Length: 449
Image (cartoon, rainbow, N blue to C red; front, top):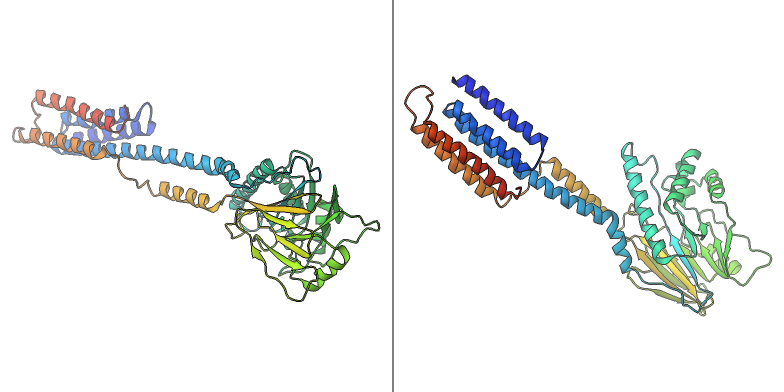
């Protein structure tokens, strides 16, 4: 066989080995073993240059095997991370929440859950097809965290404090109702519960844009309920601080506990809030909009000095008693990870002792961006070719191949001078047997057998 034919034979064996590696049938050590035998079999029919090329191909096959091992470990790590970040993290987070429970002998106890600023993403923020992925992930996050809170707390009343949609004020009628449908799917409760819905500026306009009165009509049509929602002996007064509107007091005013709920904070709007105090005489205020957890205390005399809010980020319970001369306004944090803050959660309160006391806390949600960045990093890692550290057995396996190369060189030197004469058959046969042992030992080092 001349040199040209030998090179062609070497090329065919290379292609066959590549096919074996792509098929991946059986355990990986088998195709490596076959590839080594095919490469080293070339020595019998090809000259010296082909022999050197064959051993180089063996090293390439080993590198392929190490890469496959790295891929397996990366896939296993990625699968474990996905399982944790998409399921178990929500179960684990609940163990850090406060246990707010009604006393067994208190029939007046009411559990209230406050949902603030979910701002589900619309169709315009991100161009398709990425918007479908972003919307799916944020909706799924809200759904999982909400379901976890519902299972842990099981509230009697749900209060949605506005900014339900991100693009409600600029949406078409069709888009608006599509967003409403998504909200109903996200905040789904499988038992009877009272609900209170408040519009925010992202729903009807009003901040850095004109108030959209057509969106107010759409909101009222979609969330059709009175301005005063009553549950047991509690009255929820829905105040719209965007339009400066408040409910008209009923003629037969009762002695219910009065809770004013608004999207915008009210204490900072001194004149408007003083008017509310004189007309409604509320017991407490709840608001959102700032995406922060805090509260402010103001005397019922309502002097001219504004008291700045106190941050409330610790995992503790705030006790509020209603037999004093103070007004509390509680700011509920956002429940969406898209609002530029890592402090995400749901406000939860229990009214007990015949509505003379409220215990309030925040059920904090796990962050989302760290896991999204992890997914992005893994994707970049895979795209860049899995630059991982070699297997512990890689160095020894390569050394075996180098030793085999040296033996091939010895056979080459002992050949007769001139042409491409074959070496002694016995020596070549021993080398081929040793080639099979080398291949199998390399595979054993990878833990494949």
